[in-house]
Length: 185
Image (cartoon, rainbow, N blue to C red):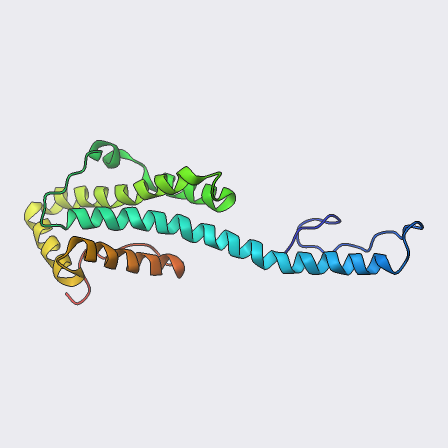
């Protein structure tokens, strides 16, 4: 699909009515040039939208990986905005901000990436709170040990492994997430 001056989205235009003031030879060339330019620009526009989709997904994934790293660390997790994260409707933020970033991109929707980062953090934090409420802190300590064993003891290394998995999921348009029980358990 492409846009042009003569028709609706995706339809080839009819050739313009001949203009007596323009030599006949230039009209078909201009028409073909316009059609070729439209056909060549569509993949570029499509790639741009795909790049925006990935950027939005990567921002969400980075927030997700960072919070999961903090919650599986041996150090106490310090979440200064825990009240806000615990009530943030991350699904709505994810849908709204992803759509906005895909359509507007950078710089018009540059704040969307920060909102998506926070939505990723909120998803993990809310899942953590639900897990603690239903299974207790001892069960979470076991999950922490399993994650450190599976993804790395070093906090930054573990975050990088989480992010690599999540980025692959974004690129392949899969559901985004790290299993609570690491693979191989």
